[in-house]
Every structure is written in structure tokens, then in C-alpha cells.
Image 1 (cartoon, helix red, strand yellow):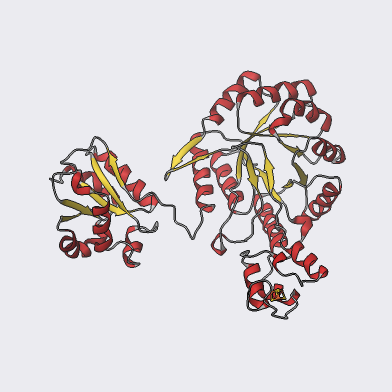
Image 2 (cartoon, rainbow, N blue to C red):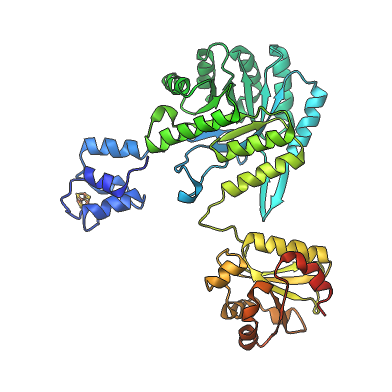
Length: 444
Ligand code: SF4
């Protein structure tokens, strides 16, 4: 758990000597708690206090990097139990398990489907992260052959799962440079997996049946020289797993219990696609860093990615688009001009409906600090003055031969004032974006 300013203050000399540049030790402690200053600015702190402060400044959940390059997956390093306390930092990875009992041909088809699982939503690209090859055949050659096929067919991150370290070692020779996650499936000896992960500088996931076992094993793995550890809990139902995940997260964040300060992962168990989707979303919300699923169909993967995108967005920073003029379709001098806010979801909803109307139009997005229409209006971020300033700044009058603006129905109350301020004729559009196609078709 991060130390508060008062916790830090108790460890400082309390002489208020000002050498650190702050008027008091308390002011310095507060700045340190907010990470605005480093501890070395105080030359008088004792070695003992320094050790305590440095240990407390370590992330309570270890960051784990799977893969390399731009597509690498970073999980862990979370600092809060609830998103509204600050934000969740590293979006949970979404991976797919493929067993080595399938043919190369089927494997190729599945990989090509998985590679295509990337979508645009509210101006962001959302996609999947990892392919996990599981050794079920118990055959070293088969596993190595399919590992080579996976490595050459996808640039997603990789994971190799099994109970025999020698079998995984053969496959690792092929894809070691990709820094795959090694997953010990809980059978056989963990020692050979620790050795394998250490020799290959790879992160290691350990499969455990209980939280207690996980705490013991992480210590053992760490002593074996592997720092990047992921905990996978097995033989549990969804409810028990969520309960254990919550316990582990709480122990790491609130009690600073180092043996449980690691990322969590889960394989979905449900066979029915809707049940699997619900299970995967539950893990994303509570508190898996990596979720490995079976279903590769777009209609099930997309909602999972949307849920992840929503959970991992910063609640204090609404997703926003640039404040500018957007052209939808082949616009001309006679095209309507719609005014709205720059909240991403608002813009993309309006843009989608304008596109559906087939009436080429301009959308002018005012900078409302990412707030939606009614919220921005209530917060005085979407006012007649602001709209006037935006319309002038963006030179809207040069684009069209008319002087008409369409505003959202929810802010019809500002139409009189807006007309006065801008000198443009104001039309009140529909309240809901779904009314836009019909409205635009009859705009003239
Ligand atoms: Fe306090 Fe250290 Fe700053 Fe002096 S230098 S005021 S002792 S925190």
C-alpha cells in the first residue's frame, strides 16, 4: 500500500531545515507521497527510514512484460482496488488457447481468424493480445512443430503451457526471442519450469489450487531467480476464483503482502459461448491481468474488448476527440452544420447517424473537455459563447453558403442566445442521435 503523506512525515527528521526546498518536513512528505519530489532531496533522512520508504515505494503488484516490441503486453503495477479511486493502469491481456492436438491446417485457420480480431471503437483500436499453445499431445515434436507454426503465423504475443519443461524447452528454442509467457500447468515439478524461465529470461505463470499455495510458490520462484511471475488459480468455479482474486489484490494493495503482489491470470472454463463471455468479462473486471479464452468468434470477442476498454479508461479523463470540423460524406456549400461536444462517444454516435442519413454534413465539435452535451451545458463548457468562439475559430462561414447551425435538442434552451451571439440561424435538432437521419433528410 502506498504510504500517505503523514506516514512519510513520521519517518522524516522533523527539523524543518528547508534544505529540500520545502518550508517544512510535512510539506516535503506530502510532495513525496504525490511523487512530485524524490527522497534524495532530503540529506538528513536516516538509513533505516530510507530503507522503509524505498521498500514502500516499490509497486505493490509487480509489472510483467510478455513479448517484445510495440505489441508487447504489460500487466500488473496496479495501485487501486476500484477504478474510481484513480484508474486501472495496464489493460488485461486477452489471449486464446490452442491445443497441440489440432492439425496444422486447422491451427492456421484459427490463427488467421485470431489475427483479424481488431476493431475501431470511439476512435481507438482495440484488439487481442496473445496466443497460448497448450501441450495436450504430450509429444515433444508435435508441440515444437505447432509452436513454429504459431510463431510464424501471428505477431501477437505467445504463451506456452504444459507440464513438461523439456517439451516447452524445445518449443522455446523457436520463439525465445518473442519472450513468451511460460505457463506451468500445475502438474509435475515446478523446479524445472523455474530453471527454464530463468535460463530464457521469460516470465513464468504458476498454476496453484489455493491462495496459500500461490503465496508459497511465488517465494520459491523468486528465490529461484525469476522476478516476473503470474498467478493462475485452477480447479475453482467462477465465484471462488473471483473471491480469491479479490483477496489476493487486497493483500497486495492494502497489506503490502509481497508473496501475493503479482498479476493474476485465468483460463475460461464455460463451454457455452455466452457463459464463457460472462466469465471472461468477470475476470477482466476482477482482477485478472490476463484472460485466456477459447471462443474466437467476433461477436463474442468484441463485447469482451469493449468491456476491457471501458474498465481501463481513465474515469477522470473522458475519452475525447479533437475539437474541429469533421466532414461526413461529400460535403458542399449547402451541407448542414451540426454542432456538438467533443466527448468521443457523443461524436461517434452523431457521426454514425449522420452517415446513416446519407446526407453529407459537417459536424463541429466544441471543446467541452470531453463532456457529453447535457453535462457540458450544466458545467458551462458548452455555452453560446463557446460555440460562437469555436465556429469563428474553425472558419465555418468559409465552408458553407448558408448561416444555419443545428444544435442538439437537449440544449434547445440556448438557441435564442446562440442566435444573438453568432448571428447564425439556429435550428434545434433531435434530442436523441437516433432521430438525426430523419431530421437531416427533412432539414431543408
Ligand atoms: Fe525536513 Fe529533510 Fe526537508 Fe530538512 S531537508 S525540511 S529535514 S524533509
